[in-house]
Amino acid sequence: MAAWRLQTLRRAAAWTRQVDGLGWVLSPAQTKQVAFHWAAADFSTKYSGERVGGVDACARRWSTTGGESGASGASNSSRPKTCKCGRARPSFGFAGDAAPSCCSRCKTQDMVRLRGPVCSCGKAFPTFGMPGDARASCCAQCKTADMVDIKHRKCTCGKTQPSFGMPGDARPTCCAKCKAAGMVVIGKRACKCGKTWAAFGLPGDARASCCAACKTAYMMDIVSPKCSVCGKHAVFPDAFGKPRQLCAVHSAEVGAHLLSSPRYSRVSNDCLDALEEEVGHEFPFRYRLDKTTGTWSGKEFSGLISGRALQPDAYHPENREIVEFLGNYYHGFPPDHPQHRSFVCVGGRPAMELYQETMARLDLFSAVGLRVSYVWEHEFTEWQKAAAGSAAPPISSILHAHILATPR
Image (cartoon, rainbow, N blue to C red):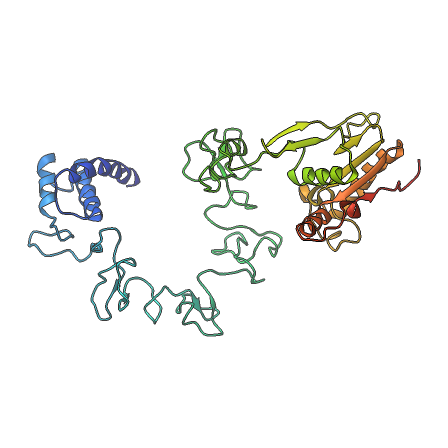
């Protein structure tokens, strides 16, 4: 049956062009229905006679007012009619009407919803009901204080919609944070492993079937938007500002995005620019952004630590001085910050752990006689806000001198 319908739909697309060429006064929806019947007559024996005769018989069943007519000329009420605009099925009409006559775009202020589940006010679909109700009964305007959103059910925590449940459950009951051991993702888009949503599938698949952990070698991401130029992940806007249309490189080519250095960020560049302006000298070894052309230049110095490929963000060889810009997502937070123990950094690692690794890394520079200073990202962000005002503190006020924890 599915194969028959697929073939019928394919033929309907071709028949639609022939219906349009006849000059009949039909709405777009009526044209689509006529074409579908003609395609059925062309593919099967639903309408008897030769191919042309079957088409003619089908055409005689239609009138310019819409609907399919039988041999007696009576309208077939089982087939939904089209709104007068011809763009959608009608759902609205006047109170007491036997059938709807207008869609949501064409309805007047006096009309109410007549099709589908409707709130008692007749203006909107119901989404709220009493706890435990199987079906919603009121819209957001008519709900009482003790009603809850039934159509968009939430987790027991009340913060987000659930995605997890026990195997065999008809509906999910918990979100990712509240799920219990043994729960799996429930839904049509769930991966077969039950741990997350599927995003990968074979080329040509209509729906993703595997997550990143379960995908095979021939699978590709068929869910995420792709760059219209190269096919990579589209994360950045195009020239018209439409989001998620191009990759970083091609978005930068149309002027909608500014590329960063592979090992650097714009915020760290702004920090070192401000520091150089205050101290009165430049750091010969650092990445530098030309804000006029949007291009990067320079390099970082390697070889300060024997046997380690450590490169500081900025290095001045004559002064034996280095400066590090510590982004919080990669280096954590200092002990006096409230997120020192709670923040989750890159790779799901706790901020406290990355902070300790960062300080141990700075100890290696101090141990070879280098003067080490660093700036925290969260402090520089606050400094930028203050610098936008009239009384800006010096950037040296947030420049920390690193003290070797254990002399070597």
